[in-house]
Amino acid sequence: MTIAQNSENVPVLRWGFLGAGLIAASFAEDLVQAQQHHKYQHEIVAVATRNSQERAAAFTERFKGSSSFPKAYGSYEELVQDSNVDIVYVSNHHPQHYDTVKLALLAGKGVLCEKPLTINYPEALDLVELAREKKVFFAEGFWIRFFPIVKKAQQLLHEERVCGKYLRLFIDFCLNSRFRELPNESRMCNVSLGAGALLDMGVYPLTWSQVLLFDDPLNGKNDPTVSSNALTFTDNNDDVGDYSTAVTLVFPKSQAIAVLCTSMDRDPVTQDFLRVDGDNGVQLIISGKCFRPQTLTLKKPDGSSEIMDFSFDATGFFYEQDAVFECIMKNLNEASEIPHGESLRMMRLTDQIRHQLKISYPADIRFTTN
Ligand SMILES: NC(=O)C1=CN([C@@H]2O[C@H](COP(=O)(O)OP(=O)(O)OC[C@H]3O[C@@H](n4cnc5c(N)ncnc54)[C@H](OP(=O)(O)O)[C@@H]3O)[C@@H](O)[C@H]2O)C=CC1
Ligand SMILES: O=C1OC[C@@H](O)[C@H](O)[C@H]1O
Image (tube, rainbow, N blue to C red; front, side):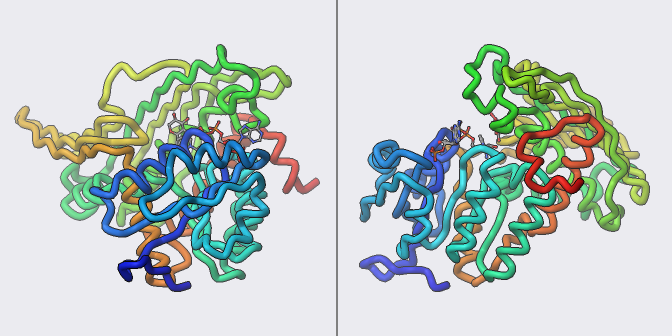
């Protein structure tokens, strides 16, 4: 696919939005209102909601670009037929990602889909195989993988071995969603809409463990052994979800271990959400939010510290958005920061953990084999 050019012959990537909710608004803000951070030109040319042209029009009113006025559709089916759309951003609820992404892929559109890619591994595998068959770009929008701080942490740990060997990773990701107080139609408390700590938030600590321990050359790309446990809630439909979930991962080859805790019933008591140590007394600490890290600190045994600032204004989607632009420009069908295999690995891992926790989603029925 070639990227369109504007009236000044500048290449512009033309986005279509399927879903006009909360994260769609944050993503749109960075896309069209954070030009100071972008290397490339982006435009929103179409927005669709599942059932309301008016709501789509209200969204386009908020985020019309400088040189165009996005089309507003009252159905996803209409948007995916729009020839002006180069790439589709999917941001509805996790259980709807599968059908929505499939609709766009079948229409020959490239897709960037919010995390978690799907509810389970079979859905993710079906979409990856379809994208490869259609030869279109497809990626999970796991935005932290595009942050410079991730590459720096990998370089320090894997190349410079600043913490030595035999790494231990501790992550505490807390964010009070007040799920017990929300109305039943909220995705944070309704299991049918994807509610649950593991799939909504736990995928962040699991992603950190993938990029810091799984990707460590000493691990040799060997999958970890996994154990997990959780505190659960029952929603108004009598479906059960997890709200505070602990996962340990052991990597036998590199003799590394990860201890991860994700809780959606409380706010953090510290900004230092991630710590790595090894066999030389040096600690690598990442501070900020698990989904929006800001500083990396090396704490040395002599009491000294080295602080690296990776803070940015705007939300931070601009890293991911420009990476997608480069993939489309180079006719790549997946992003090197999050290859299809990494999204599939994540869904295999969360399926394995959900099996241990005995947590299922109504959407699991789609691929349940008897
Ligand atoms: N990357 C990040 O930092 C974040 C990612 N996310 C991810 O984005 C996705 C959406 O989250 P968020 O924006 O908070 O969600 P919202 O609750 O804002 O809803 C998003 C969209 O889902 C659809 N939707 C809402 N309610 C229903 C319903 N009852 N039945 C069917 N569809 C419904 C609507 O789509 P429509 O407009 O088409 O009607 C809505 O606009 C999730 O998968 C989440 O994991 C969320 C927050 C942060
Ligand atoms: O991706 C996310 O990051 C922050 C959380 O507030 C949100 O629920 C989750 O989907």
